[in-house]
Image (cartoon, rainbow over the protein chains, first blue to last red):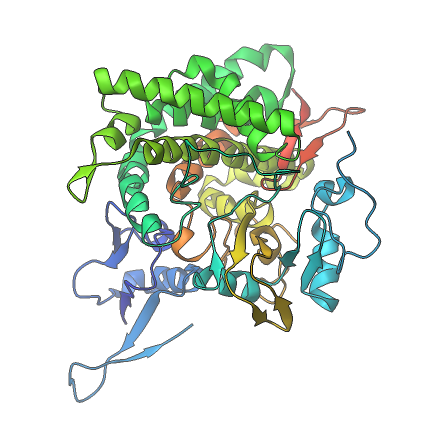
Length: 78
Length: 400
């Protein structure tokens, strides 16, 4: 599983950071982002699912890795 | 003074100050969602009241058609007095972009997760000392003796003003938010806040400290200092927005735990539930409603809205919408899926939400640690306030 926070949607509610601080970080302005390359270790997958369904701005996007690895990825909304 | 007259039809003549609605608005919202999800009234001007999650969040995100230039739920009853010292109101809450954007960026770092962690010790000591003050009595008013005393002192510390004036601040904030339709009280609150902060500003100009007020005065925007009227508005906002709101959330939560012993026992015995319980209590008893002003005639969800109409951003009702939440009217302490919008939605997300969450958590933790067994005092009433901010203003409790 790979996720990203869409910066144009995030409004700094910090729900993801509260749920999975190991994966999300927040800056001084409250904006969240995913640490590292966005790949979620299996131990954090359950937490990430929770973060996705608790974001009031629907800002956490799950990236589906495509086979051709063209750099594009399709997103699924929850 | 009678503030309201009876409501016969909530869909076309609602009144958010109706005493029965203030005490228990939930049934009205359920009825409206089923037959007229955006109600209207001409009381205090043409005003709309959305009750569905989808409508409230859609309006919050449409800042082009729904402006924040007037956010008061209870308008002044009469001709709006000139307030030349606050030409921009209380930015960023009463501003649209671009003013909203840069004033908000000045404030946000003061309420970041990291900064807020630094205020936790002060908050915990404050809560503990408040309990020390009444624990031997076996009874207390959980609203006035406890909840009301907490956020105002933390905010005073952040602003760098003396918390010995806490009761005075609380009085002004209530005048402005709860009694805005009373010209005498409103004027008293506005003048009190303005005069107080003008004096504090002149002190800070001479002797700057490491507080938020000094920071605002030293900040530069576009190569120059921030206008004094903006500093005044921002500082007043921090106090106004940081007092009634969080106090109400703490009070509602303590009221819920007083009246729901199973939930109380669970929080005492399962502290891991606390982070979820905080979000659930915020959802179920969301204190804050903000207003928006319609900028151009628009039909929204079949409602013919006119330029200048007011929208009451009913975040509390959105958070009880069964289309958005399972068992929406039930408090489920460990609710896993909870996209509540107690702090709003979109660009005006409460700038102090990290602080409010910390204060609510610490206030509940300290109360439950010292007073795990308490209940409402028989024969004495709980009094609720509503309008802009809903919460209990008196909660007589006894403890063993």
